[in-house]
Image (cartoon, rainbow, N blue to C red; front, side):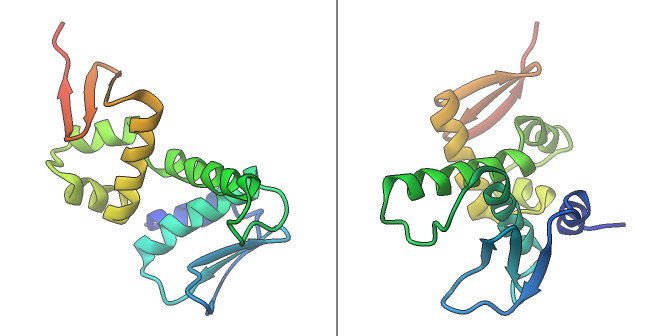
Length: 152
């Protein structure tokens, strides 16, 4: 059985992706149609980093390593949002609740993401929808995180 990271690699096998040792604190890089992932990361960290780097592949143009212009900052945010929604959809959050996940730690573990990545995703959904949203007969409150099945 493939891990979440391996599934993502398999799903996007047309994109050249390599694990290498990266310097200067980089965890991942997208350059010239290729993705590099730092080989010293955990499998869960690689899963999160790969989702963002794939976001760069599908949403970014040019070199944006330096975050000193509005255009570069916007491209970075767009790539991150792509990664968030790719591996943590509202449906995945509801499913985690449905199978018994009770808190952020359990949800992150179930979704094979870091707690930090989960929190960033929840923060983005909060920006997008406000503090709460109804989704597929569930109510999701983002702060504090609360998921309830709606009764009709």
